[in-house]
Image: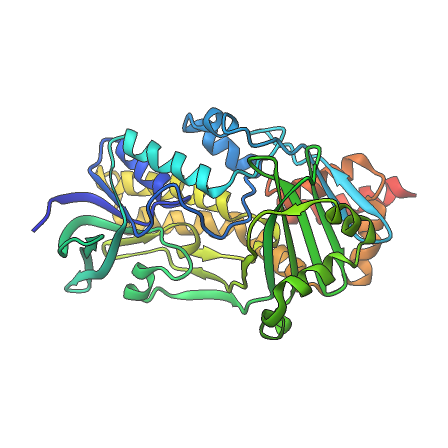
Length: 401
């Protein structure tokens, strides 16, 4: 029989390590486990928009990310073919974005959790989630080559992504679900300078994007509609280049660059899960996921970590009941992300924009204030509900006239 913890966090990447760190900083006994050892890679868009950087600043970790040499991104460019919208993603938290390699970012977060006092076990596989009388009470698992051990806690937090072991065990309610919408594959290129820009190219039924990351590498991701997912698996590289060839000027830039790594990619479902129940909680992709076309996953994970920890602290300290505190965590999350969830799904369909939206985007083009506003929507700084509100749309069309 192991120790009794206040919280066991399953998964130690962008949702799990911050959750463990923040709980440990509040003085709670925390165990964080992950089947991976760090540094290690995982599929990711890499982008941390300004709101996510705000969290890193609050935690005292922002300077550590900058120190890795990851270049800042001060311009988001969206090439729709007939015109390009270029704007700044700047928000109150940061004037720029960064896209660090996950080998760098996740190791930094794991080390911060450990430094805060959380016990971190890498290379640990959870075999079973323990449930007593309908309540989650702990986990059973093993380290690499080790004997099975049982650990118990007041709450087990699932921060282990789409295929969460905890979510599989507790079967949380899912709602507002959408099937996978697109498939995306990326790799890294050298000799492809981006000069502080993220570039997104949108064409009917296809899209691709590029932004800089660590070690003078540029991530280039190409996507197609989900209905082509199975057929295109047989020649990922060929189909990747077919998408990029839709924009000859960028294809020419890529011919002067060198591919440095293999292709990786996937298609993801879109869902909300109820993120709590007796003895358990979910953060990050384990509790809510949307298509990666707007690259919100990392800052979603950071936001969940902060809000879930605040709710758990209220519960542990006796200020509020577990159910009341966690219900607020869920409703706050859902209210914050719903408009962007729907906007992301519309983009991820890769269908041509409806005529009204085409007219609006045409009016945004050339209006720097409106272009900055559109960039901030993509960055999660401004809600789509605010940008596409009737009054703002009227202002954009008036300025265009």
